[in-house]
Image (cartoon, rainbow, N blue to C red):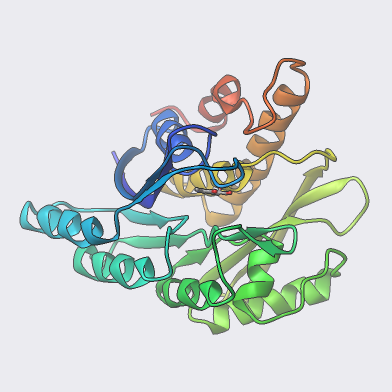
Length: 278
Ligand code: PXL
């Protein structure tokens, strides 16, 4: 069985970050070890959340794992509580990485053209440090613009998205995938670029005009799980698009669904159906 270490916060309520990565990867039959970067009462879209920063615990956990000879197939990073955590996460990755260890970076820091509430303008520069080491970076369009110093627009065309993808790989990442791309009305999906093979890929499905938080985390977790289960990156990205859409459809159909998060729990069987039996 493949083992992934996910390094991101745990929001105690709100279906994002580790409370998404753990169940999604488990459902995909991938072991998910965790290094929490912070414990928050809720995600940051709730007012008055409280947060315990764990910056100084990241490296000691990695050092303990190292002393135990723990072997990781991938490290998957997400939300960081402070820009300083980038240094700690990079050091943890450098300590634990082996030839086979792939680094997936979801630079979870912004959406709809804006940084998340707690972050200042200097935050994207810290995310860039992790993107440099990444095998795969998985930003949404806003994050891709922030990482590459590109003005944010929702109506970028195919060639402009390709340019953004190339700029992301100029940072050092081997592959980049931008989520939340819409080139035609009613369609939403992903575009990616594999620099080594100079290959572009895109995959779109239906766009449902609603917003739920945490869908980026579901997308990234599914992509990581898919690659760990032997899919190509492109196949895993397409599965992630379909799975997020399935989660949204299920949630929209439930009049009692809360305003935060999607009901991904009810959508998980799809992941089992779409993967080869073990
Ligand atoms: O879904 C990304 C995310 C992760 N962690 C925290 C967040 C968010 C998005 O708002 O607030 C704490």
